[in-house]
Image (cartoon, rainbow, N blue to C red; front, side, top):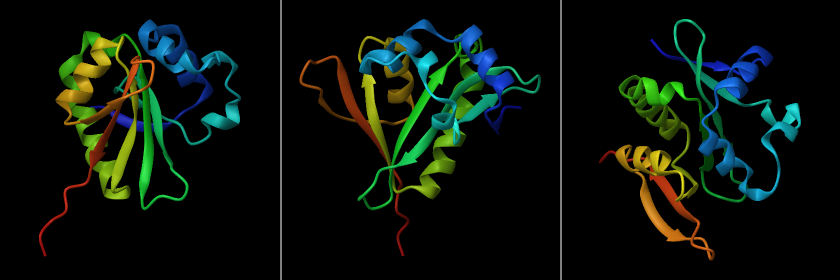
Length: 149
């Protein structure tokens, strides 16, 4: 059983020792090393762990100011997601459903060089939009399905 927990220093150490290199590369495309991220910026960060507290992913959703219930979703994964893909994808789908009850839309961009990331987002039902001007990334979103009244 996988659970979502508040990120601890121990979880962060486990994550950094097992991170997927392409995920870190994607996170650092903005020019800032992930290891240089101030801890207070990870205050709302959560981690997806198994029953032995092994970290599969870290991430979160940040409200986008001046929008109507839209959140910027992000996630960085460890190699464990490749070792146990079905388990990870099932837990990811549950997380997506949970966060779509909180936010009407979840959105961000994904680096097209991280093939596994693109494949998983597509499997989860991401709606793909335009690419960035340099064609390296593509914007995506997930939208809550409105129930008829």
